[in-house]
Amino acid sequence: MSNRGIYSKLVTLFSILLTILFVYTSVSKLMHLDTFQLRVERMPYIAPYALVISWSVPFLELVIAGLLWFPKYRILALYSSLFLLGIFTSYIIAVLTYSESIPCSCGGVISALGWRDHILLNSSFMVLALLGIIWSKSKKHYKTQTYQDTVQ
Image (cartoon, rainbow, N blue to C red; front, top):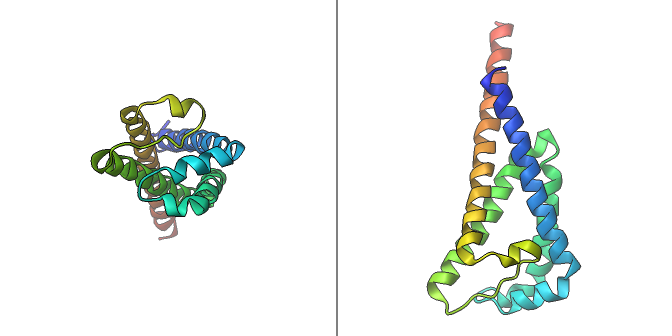
């Protein structure tokens, strides 16, 4: 088996893991939407946007999770995953650095994590998304190169 086959399987695995993360977190938020919105309202800097955030974040997570399953949209979904996780991780770091406290707006098992663990978890998923992007792009480059070689 070539390395390209392994990379393709790893990109699929990363997509599955990101899908599980996003479906789990979005369903948890939607099941307890009132609680999620209340917690966002208590968060520094973003409280005025709590209503929009409490609806748009779970919706966006579900859209990204769905797009991860369509090869045509997978790179877009991986970029979106990286972006969403990056924004949230940056926000956590900024609030921990500049604010007195930060309430957790997470649900389920993830809410049991400490903030350092949460940053580590998000960073790990960001690495998976980044590797998925790199390996998906190299796969597309390989397909284009192979096609060009056979046409000439």
